[in-house]
Length: 145
Image 1 (cartoon, rainbow, N blue to C red):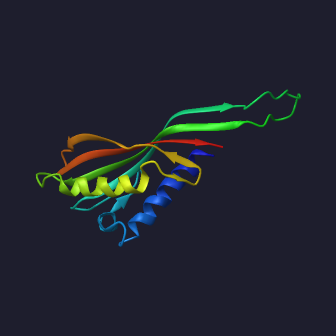
Image 2 (image 1 turned 180 degrees about the vertical axis):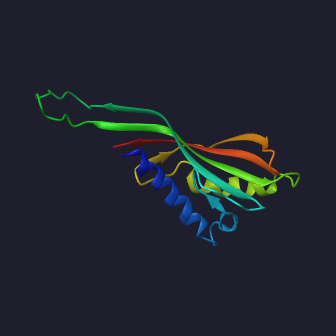
Image 3 (image 1 turned 90 degrees about the vertical axis):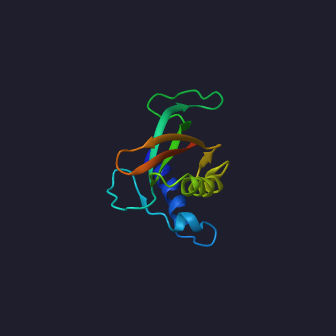
């Protein structure tokens, strides 16, 4: 699985939740900016980013190499999908907590498109100096192909 395929799997899943007002009413009303794209909103919003921490190639079992031929094996990627959550400063934590709750439902211990997600972690960054309170929602994952 290529890194761009991993990013597409996560972004597609997030986009489907944003479009689903019934099951994800908070995400449905939250503007989303993909990695390295502009965002000009004055209310709560989110930005996604993929971070690959480790990649490796390997073989399962014994496979004798034949010169000039490719050995069948696997490629494994580990990393996290980060969703930066921005809420208006001095408005409390409810908006951020509601977004985190829906993201947890969407990603925690889920498998989709060859991606295996684990339990998300939350890191509070604080005031971003632009009028928003910033929290990172990190989804650890593994892919093997």
